Amino acid sequence: MTDPILRLDGIVKHYPVGRALLPFQRRRLRAVDGVGLSVMPGETLAVVGESGCGKSTLARLMLRLIDPSDGRIFFEGEEITALTGRPLQRLRARMQLIFQDPYASLNPRLTVGQILEEPLAIHRIGARRQRRDKVAEMMRVVGLPVDHARRFPHEFSGGQRQRIAIARALVTGPSFVIGDEPVSALDVSIQAQIIELLEDLKRRMGLTMVFISHDLAVVSRIADRVAVMYLGQVIESGPTASVFASPLHPYTRALLAAAPKPDPAGRGQRALLEGDVPSAIDPPPGCRFHTRCPHATDICRVEIPMAEPGPDGHEIACHHWREIAAATTAPPVTATAHPRRQKRIAIFERQLARNQERDADIDRPGERDSRTTPSAARHPSSEKSTMGGRQ
Ligand code: ADP
Ligand code: MG
Image (cartoon, rainbow, N blue to C red):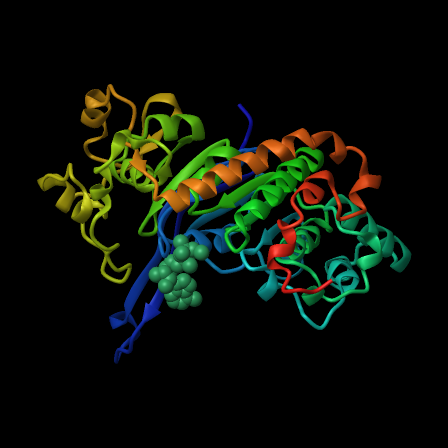
Protein backbone atom coordinates (compact mmCIF):
# COMPACT_ATOMS: atom_id res chain seq x y z
CA MET A 1 0.00 0.00 0.00
CA THR A 2 1.20 3.51 -0.78
CA ASP A 3 2.19 5.73 2.10
CA PRO A 4 0.31 8.95 2.65
CA ILE A 5 2.08 12.13 1.51
CA LEU A 6 0.72 13.88 4.60
CA ARG A 7 -0.50 12.34 7.84
CA LEU A 8 -2.03 14.00 10.87
CA ASP A 9 -2.04 12.07 14.11
CA GLY A 10 -4.26 13.37 16.92
CA ILE A 11 -3.75 16.99 15.90
CA VAL A 12 -5.01 19.61 18.32
CA LYS A 13 -5.01 23.39 18.17
CA HIS A 14 -6.37 25.27 21.17
CA TYR A 15 -6.41 29.05 21.53
CA PRO A 16 -6.49 30.60 24.99
CA VAL A 17 -9.40 33.01 25.37
CA GLY A 18 -10.40 35.58 27.99
CA ARG A 19 -8.43 36.50 31.09
CA ALA A 20 -7.56 34.48 34.15
CA LEU A 21 -5.31 34.93 37.17
CA LEU A 22 -3.36 31.78 36.41
CA PRO A 23 -2.53 30.44 32.94
CA PHE A 24 -4.15 27.05 33.52
CA GLN A 25 -7.41 28.75 34.42
CA ARG A 26 -7.72 30.32 31.00
CA ARG A 27 -10.47 28.94 28.84
CA ARG A 28 -9.51 27.47 25.53
CA LEU A 29 -11.13 27.65 22.16
CA ARG A 30 -10.83 24.22 20.61
CA ALA A 31 -10.34 25.18 16.96
CA VAL A 32 -9.06 21.72 15.99
CA ASP A 33 -9.51 18.97 18.53
CA GLY A 34 -7.98 15.60 17.81
CA VAL A 35 -7.84 15.16 14.04
CA GLY A 36 -6.32 12.06 12.49
CA LEU A 37 -6.22 12.25 8.69
CA SER A 38 -4.13 10.97 5.79
CA VAL A 39 -3.72 12.52 2.37
CA MET A 40 -2.60 10.10 -0.33
CA PRO A 41 -0.17 11.14 -3.10
CA GLY A 42 -1.95 12.52 -6.15
CA GLU A 43 -5.39 12.70 -4.62
CA THR A 44 -7.67 15.66 -4.04
CA LEU A 45 -9.03 15.58 -0.53
CA ALA A 46 -11.86 17.97 0.23
CA VAL A 47 -12.39 19.28 3.75
CA VAL A 48 -15.96 20.45 4.26
CA GLY A 49 -18.02 21.76 7.14
CA GLU A 50 -19.82 24.86 8.36
CA SER A 51 -18.04 28.14 8.91
CA GLY A 52 -15.94 28.10 12.10
CA CYS A 53 -15.56 24.31 12.29
CA GLY A 54 -11.77 24.55 11.98
CA LYS A 55 -11.05 24.05 8.27
CA SER A 56 -8.63 26.96 7.87
CA THR A 57 -6.91 26.15 11.15
CA LEU A 58 -6.44 22.58 9.96
CA ALA A 59 -4.95 23.84 6.67
CA ARG A 60 -2.47 26.04 8.54
CA LEU A 61 -1.52 23.16 10.80
CA MET A 62 -0.93 20.88 7.80
CA LEU A 63 1.46 23.44 6.34
CA ARG A 64 3.11 24.16 9.70
CA LEU A 65 2.15 27.82 9.38
CA ILE A 66 0.94 27.50 12.98
CA ASP A 67 2.16 25.13 15.66
CA PRO A 68 -0.12 22.37 16.93
CA SER A 69 -0.98 22.28 20.65
CA ASP A 70 -0.72 18.51 20.49
CA GLY A 71 -0.36 15.65 18.01
CA ARG A 72 2.08 14.85 15.23
CA ILE A 73 2.38 15.74 11.54
CA PHE A 74 4.24 13.72 8.93
CA PHE A 75 5.05 14.89 5.40
CA GLU A 76 6.57 12.55 2.81
CA GLY A 77 7.44 10.11 5.57
CA GLU A 78 9.26 12.65 7.72
CA GLU A 79 7.94 14.07 10.98
CA ILE A 80 7.54 17.83 10.62
CA THR A 81 5.71 18.58 13.89
CA ALA A 82 8.58 20.50 15.46
CA LEU A 83 10.56 21.55 12.38
CA THR A 84 12.13 25.03 12.59
CA GLY A 85 14.69 27.20 10.80
CA ARG A 86 16.14 26.17 7.45
CA PRO A 87 14.47 22.74 7.27
CA LEU A 88 11.06 24.40 7.81
CA GLN A 89 11.94 27.01 5.20
CA ARG A 90 12.82 24.27 2.71
CA LEU A 91 9.55 22.51 3.49
CA ARG A 92 7.60 25.69 2.67
CA ALA A 93 8.71 25.47 -0.96
CA ARG A 94 7.16 22.01 -1.22
CA MET A 95 3.80 22.83 0.39
CA GLN A 96 1.78 25.84 -0.63
CA LEU A 97 -1.49 27.55 0.19
CA ILE A 98 -3.96 29.26 -2.12
CA PHE A 99 -6.18 31.67 -0.21
CA GLN A 100 -9.83 32.49 -0.66
CA ASP A 101 -9.46 36.16 -1.41
CA PRO A 102 -6.87 36.91 -4.10
CA TYR A 103 -7.36 40.64 -3.52
CA ALA A 104 -6.24 40.45 0.08
CA SER A 105 -3.46 37.93 -0.49
CA LEU A 106 -1.62 39.75 -3.30
CA ASN A 107 0.67 42.63 -2.37
CA PRO A 108 -0.87 45.65 -4.15
CA ARG A 109 2.52 47.41 -4.38
CA LEU A 110 4.21 44.68 -6.39
CA THR A 111 3.74 43.92 -10.07
CA VAL A 112 2.62 40.47 -11.06
CA GLY A 113 6.15 39.71 -12.22
CA GLN A 114 7.54 40.68 -8.81
CA ILE A 115 4.81 38.75 -6.99
CA LEU A 116 5.68 35.60 -8.89
CA GLU A 117 9.43 36.07 -8.59
CA GLU A 118 9.37 36.66 -4.84
CA PRO A 119 8.92 33.02 -3.75
CA LEU A 120 11.76 31.98 -6.08
CA ALA A 121 14.04 34.61 -4.55
CA ILE A 122 13.06 33.65 -1.00
CA HIS A 123 13.81 30.00 -1.66
CA ARG A 124 16.90 30.90 -3.70
CA ILE A 125 15.68 29.01 -6.74
CA GLY A 126 17.52 29.78 -9.99
CA ALA A 127 19.50 32.80 -11.13
CA ARG A 128 17.78 36.07 -12.04
CA ARG A 129 17.38 35.13 -15.68
CA GLN A 130 15.99 31.68 -14.90
CA ARG A 131 13.53 33.21 -12.46
CA ARG A 132 12.25 35.56 -15.15
CA ASP A 133 11.77 32.62 -17.49
CA LYS A 134 10.00 30.67 -14.78
CA VAL A 135 7.67 33.61 -14.10
CA ALA A 136 6.78 33.87 -17.80
CA GLU A 137 6.21 30.12 -17.95
CA MET A 138 3.92 30.18 -14.91
CA MET A 139 1.90 33.06 -16.34
CA ARG A 140 1.41 31.10 -19.54
CA VAL A 141 0.47 27.96 -17.61
CA VAL A 142 -2.28 29.71 -15.63
CA GLY A 143 -3.58 31.49 -18.71
CA LEU A 144 -2.33 35.04 -18.15
CA PRO A 145 -0.82 37.14 -20.93
CA VAL A 146 2.94 37.21 -20.33
CA ASP A 147 3.17 40.88 -21.27
CA HIS A 148 0.96 41.68 -18.24
CA ALA A 149 3.87 40.94 -15.88
CA ARG A 150 4.42 44.67 -15.30
CA ARG A 151 0.85 45.27 -14.23
CA PHE A 152 -0.38 45.50 -10.64
CA PRO A 153 -2.98 43.19 -9.06
CA HIS A 154 -5.72 45.85 -9.12
CA GLU A 155 -5.51 45.92 -12.90
CA PHE A 156 -6.87 42.40 -13.09
CA SER A 157 -10.31 40.86 -12.64
CA GLY A 158 -11.13 38.63 -9.67
CA GLY A 159 -10.67 35.48 -11.74
CA GLN A 160 -7.35 36.69 -13.13
CA ARG A 161 -6.14 37.64 -9.66
CA GLN A 162 -6.87 34.11 -8.51
CA ARG A 163 -4.83 32.88 -11.49
CA ILE A 164 -1.95 35.03 -10.22
CA ALA A 165 -2.35 33.60 -6.71
CA ILE A 166 -2.31 30.08 -8.13
CA ALA A 167 0.79 30.84 -10.19
CA ARG A 168 2.52 32.20 -7.09
CA ALA A 169 1.63 29.08 -5.11
CA LEU A 170 2.95 26.79 -7.84
CA VAL A 171 6.05 28.69 -8.96
CA THR A 172 8.35 26.93 -6.46
CA GLY A 173 7.21 23.53 -7.77
CA PRO A 174 5.44 22.21 -4.66
CA SER A 175 4.11 18.66 -4.49
CA PHE A 176 1.34 19.49 -2.02
CA VAL A 177 -1.10 22.38 -2.35
CA ILE A 178 -3.99 23.47 -0.16
CA GLY A 179 -6.75 25.64 -1.58
CA ASP A 180 -8.60 27.33 1.28
CA GLU A 181 -11.94 28.19 -0.31
CA PRO A 182 -10.02 29.15 -3.46
CA VAL A 183 -13.12 29.93 -5.50
CA SER A 184 -15.59 31.09 -2.84
CA ALA A 185 -14.98 34.78 -3.51
CA LEU A 186 -15.51 34.45 -7.27
CA ASP A 187 -18.54 34.66 -9.52
CA VAL A 188 -20.02 31.28 -10.19
CA SER A 189 -19.12 31.25 -13.90
CA ILE A 190 -15.51 32.10 -13.06
CA GLN A 191 -15.46 29.48 -10.30
CA ALA A 192 -15.82 26.79 -12.95
CA GLN A 193 -12.87 28.21 -14.93
CA ILE A 194 -10.62 28.33 -11.89
CA ILE A 195 -11.58 24.83 -10.83
CA GLU A 196 -10.89 23.62 -14.32
CA LEU A 197 -7.47 25.29 -14.14
CA LEU A 198 -6.69 23.72 -10.76
CA GLU A 199 -7.63 20.26 -12.02
CA ASP A 200 -5.54 20.75 -15.13
CA LEU A 201 -2.51 21.94 -13.14
CA LYS A 202 -2.92 19.10 -10.71
CA ARG A 203 -2.79 16.59 -13.56
CA ARG A 204 0.14 18.25 -15.30
CA MET A 205 2.27 18.84 -12.23
CA GLY A 206 1.33 15.67 -10.35
CA LEU A 207 0.11 17.62 -7.34
CA THR A 208 -1.63 16.38 -4.26
CA MET A 209 -4.37 18.77 -3.28
CA VAL A 210 -6.41 19.55 -0.21
CA PHE A 211 -9.46 21.52 -1.23
CA ILE A 212 -11.30 23.36 1.50
CA SER A 213 -14.81 24.41 0.69
CA HIS A 214 -18.28 24.78 2.06
CA ASP A 215 -19.71 24.39 -1.43
CA LEU A 216 -20.65 20.75 -1.82
CA ALA A 217 -21.46 21.13 -5.52
CA VAL A 218 -17.85 22.13 -6.16
CA VAL A 219 -16.50 19.42 -3.87
CA SER A 220 -18.49 16.66 -5.55
CA ARG A 221 -16.79 17.55 -8.83
CA ILE A 222 -13.22 18.05 -7.79
CA ALA A 223 -12.49 15.75 -4.84
CA ASP A 224 -11.52 12.08 -4.77
CA ARG A 225 -12.12 11.90 -1.05
CA VAL A 226 -13.91 14.10 1.41
CA ALA A 227 -13.47 14.72 5.13
CA VAL A 228 -16.39 16.30 6.99
CA MET A 229 -15.57 18.48 10.00
CA TYR A 230 -17.79 19.48 12.88
CA LEU A 231 -16.55 21.65 15.76
CA GLY A 232 -12.88 20.90 15.30
CA GLN A 233 -13.21 17.20 14.56
CA VAL A 234 -13.47 15.03 11.46
CA ILE A 235 -16.71 13.12 11.92
CA GLU A 236 -16.80 11.24 8.60
CA SER A 237 -14.46 10.69 5.69
CA GLY A 238 -14.50 8.52 2.61
CA PRO A 239 -14.51 8.46 -1.19
CA THR A 240 -16.49 11.47 -2.43
CA ALA A 241 -19.00 9.55 -4.55
CA SER A 242 -19.77 7.18 -1.70
CA VAL A 243 -19.99 9.86 0.98
CA PHE A 244 -22.37 11.86 -1.21
CA ALA A 245 -24.47 8.83 -2.15
CA SER A 246 -24.52 7.12 1.25
CA PRO A 247 -23.52 9.45 4.05
CA LEU A 248 -23.56 7.62 7.37
CA HIS A 249 -22.89 10.25 10.01
CA PRO A 250 -26.06 12.17 10.90
CA TYR A 251 -24.17 15.43 10.46
CA THR A 252 -22.97 14.53 6.95
CA ARG A 253 -26.53 13.55 6.13
CA ALA A 254 -27.83 16.84 7.44
CA LEU A 255 -25.16 18.83 5.63
CA LEU A 256 -25.97 17.14 2.32
CA ALA A 257 -29.68 17.52 2.94
CA ALA A 258 -29.24 21.23 3.51
CA ALA A 259 -27.12 21.57 0.37
CA PRO A 260 -29.00 22.72 -2.67
CA LYS A 261 -29.82 20.00 -5.15
CA PRO A 262 -32.26 20.45 -7.97
CA ASP A 263 -34.46 17.64 -6.67
CA PRO A 264 -37.83 18.34 -5.12
CA ALA A 265 -38.13 14.89 -3.51
CA GLY A 266 -36.50 15.73 -0.20
CA ARG A 267 -38.49 18.83 0.66
CA GLY A 268 -38.75 19.36 4.38
CA GLN A 269 -35.57 17.49 5.28
CA ARG A 270 -33.63 20.68 5.86
CA ALA A 271 -35.02 20.84 9.38
CA LEU A 272 -32.29 18.36 10.31
CA LEU A 273 -29.73 21.13 10.67
CA GLU A 274 -31.74 23.40 12.89
CA GLY A 275 -30.05 25.18 15.71
CA ASP A 276 -26.74 27.02 15.82
CA VAL A 277 -23.33 25.40 15.89
CA PRO A 278 -22.36 25.29 19.59
CA SER A 279 -19.36 27.32 20.70
CA ALA A 280 -15.90 25.84 20.25
CA ILE A 281 -15.01 27.28 23.67
CA ASP A 282 -17.30 24.97 25.61
CA PRO A 283 -18.19 22.28 23.10
CA PRO A 284 -20.90 19.79 24.12
CA PRO A 285 -19.60 16.76 26.03
CA GLY A 286 -19.79 13.32 24.44
CA CYS A 287 -20.52 13.55 20.74
CA ARG A 288 -20.27 17.20 19.73
CA PHE A 289 -23.18 16.86 17.35
CA HIS A 290 -25.63 15.44 19.90
CA THR A 291 -27.30 18.81 20.57
CA ARG A 292 -28.49 18.91 16.94
CA CYS A 293 -28.71 15.22 16.14
CA PRO A 294 -32.04 13.47 15.49
CA HIS A 295 -30.51 10.12 16.50
CA ALA A 296 -28.95 11.20 19.80
CA THR A 297 -29.37 8.91 22.81
CA ASP A 298 -27.91 8.90 26.33
CA ILE A 299 -24.52 7.50 25.29
CA CYS A 300 -24.04 10.38 22.82
CA ARG A 301 -24.32 12.88 25.65
CA VAL A 302 -21.47 11.36 27.65
CA GLU A 303 -19.15 9.31 25.45
CA ILE A 304 -17.04 10.71 22.64
CA PRO A 305 -17.45 8.43 19.61
CA MET A 306 -14.19 7.14 18.12
CA ALA A 307 -13.68 7.08 14.35
CA GLU A 308 -14.43 3.58 13.07
CA PRO A 309 -13.95 2.05 9.63
CA GLY A 310 -17.30 1.59 7.88
CA PRO A 311 -18.41 0.35 4.46
CA ASP A 312 -16.85 1.67 1.20
CA GLY A 313 -13.79 3.09 2.90
CA HIS A 314 -15.78 5.43 5.15
CA GLU A 315 -14.58 6.34 8.59
CA ILE A 316 -17.34 7.46 10.88
CA ALA A 317 -17.30 8.81 14.42
CA CYS A 318 -20.86 8.10 15.55
CA HIS A 319 -22.31 5.74 18.15
CA HIS A 320 -25.24 4.91 15.90
CA TRP A 321 -23.81 4.67 12.39
CA ARG A 322 -24.55 0.95 12.11
CA GLU A 323 -28.28 1.44 12.81
CA ILE A 324 -28.33 4.34 10.40
CA ALA A 325 -26.59 2.28 7.71
CA ALA A 326 -29.04 -0.60 8.28
CA ALA A 327 -32.06 1.69 8.10
CA THR A 328 -30.86 3.49 4.99
CA THR A 329 -32.21 1.71 1.98
CA ALA A 330 -33.40 4.77 0.09
CA PRO A 331 -30.96 7.31 -1.32
CA PRO A 332 -29.88 9.95 1.16
CA VAL A 333 -32.13 12.84 2.00
CA THR A 334 -32.07 15.70 -0.44
CA ALA A 335 -33.46 19.16 -0.21
CA THR A 336 -34.81 21.60 -2.72
CA ALA A 337 -32.59 24.48 -3.59
CA HIS A 338 -33.83 27.99 -3.60
CA PRO A 339 -34.64 28.82 -7.25
CA ARG A 340 -31.81 31.35 -7.36
CA ARG A 341 -29.36 28.72 -6.13
CA GLN A 342 -30.69 26.22 -8.67
CA LYS A 343 -29.99 28.75 -11.37
CA ARG A 344 -26.43 29.21 -10.10
CA ILE A 345 -25.89 25.46 -10.14
CA ALA A 346 -27.21 25.25 -13.69
CA ILE A 347 -24.87 28.06 -14.80
CA PHE A 348 -21.98 26.35 -13.03
CA GLU A 349 -22.68 23.05 -14.74
CA ARG A 350 -23.09 24.61 -18.17
CA GLN A 351 -19.85 26.48 -17.74
CA LEU A 352 -18.06 23.33 -16.65
CA ALA A 353 -19.36 21.47 -19.71
CA ARG A 354 -18.16 24.31 -21.96
CA ASN A 355 -14.77 24.33 -20.32
CA GLN A 356 -14.46 20.62 -20.89
CA GLU A 357 -15.22 21.14 -24.58
CA ARG A 358 -12.41 23.62 -24.54
CA ASP A 359 -9.97 21.10 -23.04
CA ALA A 360 -8.09 20.73 -26.30
CA ASP A 361 -6.91 24.35 -26.01
CA ILE A 362 -5.17 23.67 -22.72
CA ASP A 363 -2.51 21.67 -24.50
CA ARG A 364 -1.87 24.56 -26.87
CA PRO A 365 -0.28 27.15 -24.60
CA GLY A 366 0.02 29.71 -27.41
CA GLU A 367 -3.71 30.25 -27.42
CA ARG A 368 -3.76 30.70 -23.68
CA ASP A 369 -1.54 33.75 -23.95
CA SER A 370 -4.64 35.64 -24.86
CA ARG A 371 -7.49 36.21 -22.44
CA THR A 372 -9.89 35.55 -25.28
CA THR A 373 -10.02 31.82 -24.79
CA PRO A 374 -13.04 30.41 -26.59
CA SER A 375 -15.06 30.24 -23.40
CA ALA A 376 -14.22 33.80 -22.44
CA ALA A 377 -15.11 34.89 -25.95
CA ARG A 378 -18.45 33.21 -25.72
CA HIS A 379 -19.03 34.73 -22.30
CA PRO A 380 -17.74 38.23 -22.46
CA SER A 381 -19.50 38.97 -19.21
CA SER A 382 -17.85 36.15 -17.29
CA GLU A 383 -14.42 37.27 -16.05
CA LYS A 384 -15.17 40.89 -16.73
CA SER A 385 -18.02 40.91 -14.29
CA THR A 386 -15.67 41.35 -11.33
CA MET A 387 -13.20 43.57 -13.08
CA GLY A 388 -14.45 46.82 -11.72
CA GLY A 389 -14.12 48.40 -15.16
CA ARG A 390 -10.34 48.03 -15.34
CA GLN A 391 -8.19 46.73 -18.14
P1 ADP B 1 -13.30 27.66 9.27
O1 ADP B 1 -12.14 27.87 8.36
O2 ADP B 1 -13.86 26.29 9.22
O3 ADP B 1 -14.37 28.69 9.08
P2 ADP B 1 -11.41 28.43 11.34
O4 ADP B 1 -10.35 27.39 11.31
O5 ADP B 1 -11.11 29.73 10.70
O6 ADP B 1 -12.77 27.82 10.78
O7 ADP B 1 -11.77 28.73 12.87
C1 ADP B 1 -12.10 27.69 13.77
C2 ADP B 1 -12.35 28.30 15.12
O8 ADP B 1 -11.13 28.79 15.64
C3 ADP B 1 -13.30 29.48 15.08
O9 ADP B 1 -14.09 29.43 16.26
C4 ADP B 1 -12.38 30.67 15.09
O10 ADP B 1 -12.99 31.78 15.68
C5 ADP B 1 -11.22 30.16 15.94
N1 ADP B 1 -9.92 30.77 15.60
C6 ADP B 1 -9.27 30.66 14.41
N2 ADP B 1 -8.07 31.29 14.45
C7 ADP B 1 -7.97 31.81 15.71
C8 ADP B 1 -6.96 32.58 16.39
N3 ADP B 1 -5.83 32.95 15.79
N4 ADP B 1 -7.21 32.93 17.68
C9 ADP B 1 -8.35 32.57 18.29
N5 ADP B 1 -9.31 31.84 17.73
C10 ADP B 1 -9.15 31.46 16.45
MG1 MG C 1 -11.87 29.22 6.79
